[in-house]
Amino acid sequence: MKFTKAAQQRYRELDFKLNRARLSWRRNGFSNENEDQILASYIAELLPPDHDRTAVDIGAGDGRRWSNTYALFLNGWQGVGIEFDSRKFVSLAHAYKYFDKVFACRNRATPDNIVPLFKSYEIDKNFSVLSLDIDGNDYWVLRAILSEFRPRLIVTEINEKIPPPFRFVVKYNPNFQLRHHFFGYSISMLADLCEEFGYVILELEYNNAFLAPGELARGRGLDAKTAYARGYFDRPDRKEKFSLNFDMEAVYSLGDEEAFEFLKNFYAKFPGEFHLELSRESMAESLGADSTHE
Image (cartoon, rainbow, N blue to C red; front, side, top):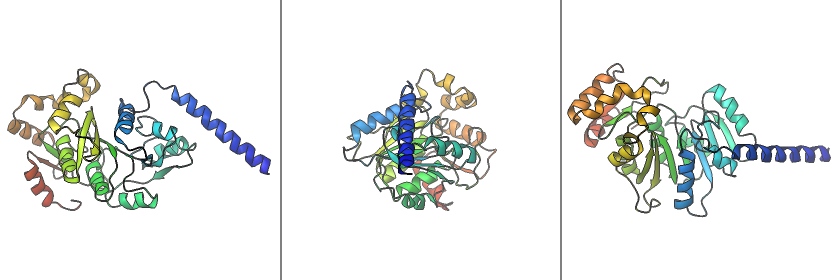
């Protein structure tokens, strides 16, 4: 019996090493663009040597494809991947089977349950990396996390179609369904959230923003307009990569007031389901009038 267990353990170790070697040949990493490589550079540059090497991936998908965290887990990190879709979760659990300290959690992330979920997995307050991409209630879930945790690096998807200075966020809906161009929140909304909780925007990679606490950023930090221009709008391949955004191009050629009316009309088919404002003050008033999860 002891021999059998030892043989099984040896087989698992060899299987893991072969799998890791096979995956390490991926030249472009696992992320949709270069997110995992950008993340690796910030980990090396900004995080202290004694950081806990814990990653939490919310909206983890199948665990590998378009993953910002799988490369970390391959390199011995610990953590949790949270995914609600049952089919994706099966693949996620399979992807994590090689890792002793990485857990697959099937749950819908909400602003009400995310902090208890973190605590149930004993996630440290200052854990190393958070990746958040749930195509809907991202703003509300991130706000809930930052109310009690202070991840050292964050990668979060924004709604790249909406330029500064417009503040846009879908209202919290536990049953939210992704629809054409209707999800998430704008980069100006993210910038306001960062200022509230003492974070900065390090950069934008198309539609994924990288954040860090001000005390770790070493004087870095971009305003929303600069981050948006460098990371999305001025990229020469933007229209090719985001060809489905063609019907939002008009917003870039309009003045603020005209663009604001354009956006209001564009999203008029979703009455009562979003907040859209020009200034931080007006958005604060709008959120205050609808403060279910504010």
